[in-house]
Image (cartoon, rainbow over the protein chains, first blue to last red):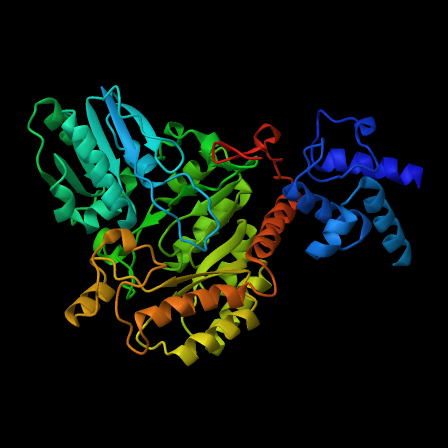
Length: 86
Length: 420
């Protein structure tokens, strides 16, 4: 799981062009949206698209999105478990 | 010579998501100014007007009827300071007589090739009250690339996302639709710009996303197809008013980067159902522009209509009520029948009822307008539907490598204002 978390960190930085953010700056259990990283709802849109195209995992409603994007750990876990299931 | 060009503010429709696009009229007008004119532009929707340090000459550009009252107030302030004020733009043409009461001069018509005369008159203190070129349109070839350099681009940015830039490839319209003033303003003759000029302008715009503001692109099939074919290499993504309902044209439009169209939907016919489907089949989104309050509209019809709009899966819908703007067929009819009950132009917002509908009361139409918004966005919010449409443009851009990330330094700003 740790490796996958690192992979998702890289994907987030790459997808959102977060030039000033290093992987170590992302706290796996901190709120992903609205926290120090400056990730907002528009970034979430882009991440949803990346997750669908790169992992085939669809996040298509607000309630699910809020749950999944609550932290990096929950996001990685959600992708991992739904990807495995497919 | 310093010339201050002002675009008066107006209140957005109550249910519409607030956003500000860079205005098109003023930048097109600025391109028609003599070279020695130093133009300073203020869009009051996004920044306050500096009334101190008055310039030599002020121009007020108005597009909408709901800009008129504010435009007149601005003129009064400058004129009290001894500054001469000239008005132009669509709403000036629609409200010329009223505007003249507050102006040193009004310019009616299209500006290309006319401004040297106007500024010479100003310099020689012989400004005319009216420059009426409404029925003398300049050759369309004279329309140059708009002066977008007068805009402060960061003011048209929402959380780092640059708003679409506006551009036009034609003027005039061969149709004369009931609620529309274009026949009066730009004439019934469709006047396409030379394609190379329109393409050169689009290519020059530092924005991958455009709004092609032509009244309707569906006026000359060959020109439309030629235009789209030339647009393909630009890789721009764009929204527009209707595209011709022809598979070959729609296919070229999609290749040229058509993102979504503003399509008026008037009825619940199979034709409309198929029309929307054909856009979708070509990957083109549809924002329905829905006008309520026509003489055929009963309460039952309006309710069935909203259900129909949900069935045909419009990507977005914007609901307005029929508003009889001057110089439209709607105005002539409703005025002749004594059905317009206010001429307070500040109420001509398109979300306030200003006339007596045929089958229902004005109050009931107002309630049905709210019903339409509420019902259409009940199962999926406007924000969610807009997000889906936005995802479409990102997907198109990523597919052809034209995607540009948003400006991260502006993510905490909306239209020049800091947000929390």
